[in-house]
Amino acid sequence: MSETNDVRLLPVRPGAALAVIAFVTGILSFETARECHQNLQLHGFHASFGPSLLYGCVIWLWWNVVLMLLWNFAMRWSVVLKPSARTIAAHAGVSCALAGAHLLLIQYTVGLCSSLWPAWGSHYMTHRVEDPEHFGVEIIIYGFIYGICAFLYSRMQAQHAAVQKLEVERQLSEAQLKALQMQMEPHFLFNTLNAITSLVSQGKNDEAMQTLAHLNAILRTTLQRRSPEKVPFTEELQLIESYLAIQKVRYADRIEIDIQTTSEARKGLVPSFLLQPLVENAVRHGIESRKSGGRIETRAEKLGDKLWMRVRDNGSGVASSRSQGHGIGISNVKERLAFFYPHTHQFEIESPSGGGYQVTIQIPFEEAPVCS
Image: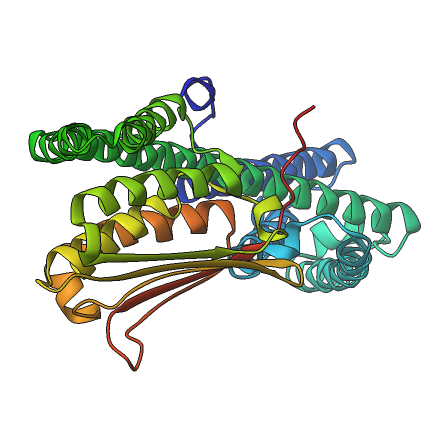
């Protein structure tokens, strides 16, 4: 949490920012008109302020429209403002086309003003807008506008990322708290300790010690994970194995556990607490809800450049699970997947033909660092 709390971003409100830019454009238009009018007076020409104001508006309102269009395009297609050789070449072409069109519009405006206000035109008809320096100024102005849009867009993206990270951290904290509460619930501890007592009374001391070790591993893992980090898949696997081992002691023959993962999959990275909520839900809705118990299957393998995972139970299925609160943990998992792997993950929920509830996840494969 500390990393996110250190983020300091200036608030960016596009509407307010563009309103300020429009205001600045108006000021520039007026100042250009005033300078134009004063220039006429200095050279002994007497004309109304109207043509000078029209001239200033044509110069600057054009670029205000260009800015609005560029911003709207960027909101629809973010690639417009992402620096790359392709986009830079595209912007270079667009800037040249806009510069040429703007200079032609200015030339037309000068001609129009000259016909309506001859005194004004007698001075500015000698102003050649097709001169190379004017074309260069147009290109520079477009580059400046692009820079403004790119800056505003980057700040918006940074704010969005920061807010999203805060939300994911909040969700992870809730997941940690929920997991800890589940582990500390009186009936959970009572049932676990009762099972351990039973094992001890039967002389199964080794099994009792193993059950305590599994409980200790769950508590230690839950308390140690403090941020929405990615962890080696082996750690997540150990967490669900410990959880299911305790449930096996509790439910005995009522629960059948089948975990199969490939060696390649175990080398990967996954978001912390990715599978634990799914397995917990599978036990709650696939085992507790059935007097005859049920089966929990967990699969993981590396498929090309993807890590594929599946958690399945043979309980009451999708509709019943959602009605019993199954969707809360699922929603948390989905949102964290979207945070870590935007547009690059797959998440599917279905009821297999044989019944039950099945969740399939596919994420980009990232190899976990090897501890030295």
